[in-house]
Amino acid sequence: MYSVIVVPPACAEADEQLRIATGERLSFGRTVPNGGLAIAHEGVPRVAGEITAHRSYWLLSNLSVDQTYVVDNPEGAGEHLKVAPGRLEAPVPFEFARVVLPAAGDLLTFDVWAPRHAFRSADRLGLAGPATAPAFALDRTSRYFAVLAALCEPRLRGEPHAPLPAVEQLVERLRPAWPTVSRSTVYWNIDYLALKLRLRPGSDTAGPGLRVNGKKESLVSLALRFDLVREDDLTVLTVPAAAPREAVR
Image (cartoon, rainbow, N blue to C red):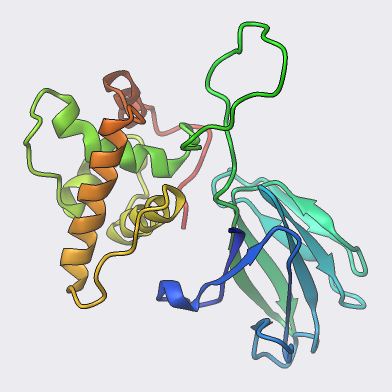
């Protein structure tokens, strides 16, 4: 089972993503062998670096001679880490990360996701022994959880058969707590939720709108069936704009 997903620049389809399991390595650079991430730019070294998956996080090796790489947390309001030239296996703890490579005056980026992050939601009452792994690991402070809450809101408000909100309605509902929200960020978070909650992919023959509606219906059904979102979670939709995290993408 994969634990880290590398999203190439300008990636538009899920089958263009690169997925690696714990212990596997992925090289990136201008010319990389064996299915690595190729970045066609004259300012990028032939082999610029390497990503190693390790359970719920990943390691970044900077194989350049003189360039520092930066890893941004798009949800962290400026949170980032720097990986110096020659540094091997620097741990990256972010669930969403954007690797920034300086290249002959340009700044090139690609994304890395670690969707297997786990979160404890309650104390274990002092019980001895290892904790039980959560079936669905959701970060309730993240933007994707706000999108899931907005999707579930009509049915949580006592209308079990209410139609699900359209993407335009989700944008308007999320805007008070997330001023920079857009259609593309909502679509992106719906896709990420489907991946994180391991929904089965829908039919490739369906049109884009039908695929999105199918994902929304499956997400809401799963979330309400297993109480992943409760009515008291809807407060995430009214958090002031000064919330600690900024928008993904």
